[in-house]
Image 1 (tube, helix red, strand yellow):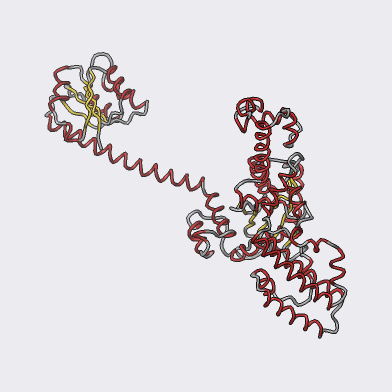
Image 2 (cartoon, rainbow, N blue to C red):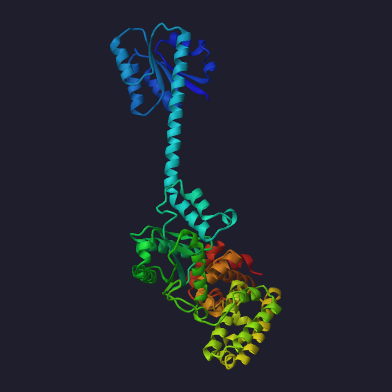
Length: 541
């Protein structure tokens, strides 16, 4: 640590003696400044951060006491040692009252003056160390308070979508590492209710930035409308899924009507104020250890929902897909065998199942339909999980007469099942080798519908995907939102037409999907830095 010293004295000889004849460097004082009066001292104090000042009290004009008073009023923390040739008690009393470090009588031995300065530096260092520790503690405390919501969000994100280092960490370990230091609003022994907020579709086309802003506003609205007086949080996970977690929900779990009413109010607000159609998926109340599984089920419910919007679905309640309500025997390992491509083993298990059905005299038409829907559900879930469009891969499933023919008799259903195993597994294999992925199908659709109004809802309807699920899938695979990808492709085509054709700029705008010419020009300049006309002049081939 290095220091600065200021010596103030109107007697030139005394001033020079203190400045030049004492070895100040031995005290790590690297700079020594001098002033002959208070006015010059103020200039030095304004120019440099001085640690210790040795000052004569009696000076013409403003004296040393008045100079120190001026320093204190301006918050200058320089330690001050007064020198005086008069042993006046009132001087000493005033000097100590206004905060000087020491008061010495002239003539003063240089060794004693040096020792006094050393003591002043020690006091200064001790004061600074205490202030630094206090400042750090205060800064960290404020930082922790300001970042508390970040730590809480990180806890729930790691719990709902474990990844990286947290993938194998238990709930208790997460609770200890993140929350024990910030005194959370909940206990690990509470009952929790998770709720998935799904944007079914936007009312108009937005860029990813605008969508993020609207989602942020929706999350604030969820805090005010859904949580309101309940303890909880709203968190956006890494995948983009938005969850509301309600704490201490034991009382709420006994009467879900209030929660459903708040969800309806929230859906109405999103429809009116945030240009969106939204659905809420309410999870089952349970302990914190069941949150991850419940959220996974809510995401699966969202993925399966391709027709209803502005709706409320309750896990295990009023939302069940057709297959889950059926009573026919359906071993869970069939889906595992199908997804892993073990065709022979799957066919053997199905044969055993059909032999069992043949021995059941009560097997009815409804049971045939139940089996059909189970099987179709298995295909859809597996294909969706792997990013394959069922409607493109298996066209027969889109025909109504397919179900009617398959469910006429048990033998017909058995034959249909065998054909579907062959066709679906072949389609799965073709997908891995040659068939376009969902992302490629989206890209193809955008290219062929460039001149039309394109929305993610149009694309989702074409591929029979949930819009929110499709949007997250596309962004995960490409790093771009659908809206940004569409705009990027339009700009690419516009640049190509401007540089390679003689089409009017207005025609180029219309071909690339922009009916408003001025909007196209403004957007083009924002993206490329030039107007379409300037771009053509620079790049015309």
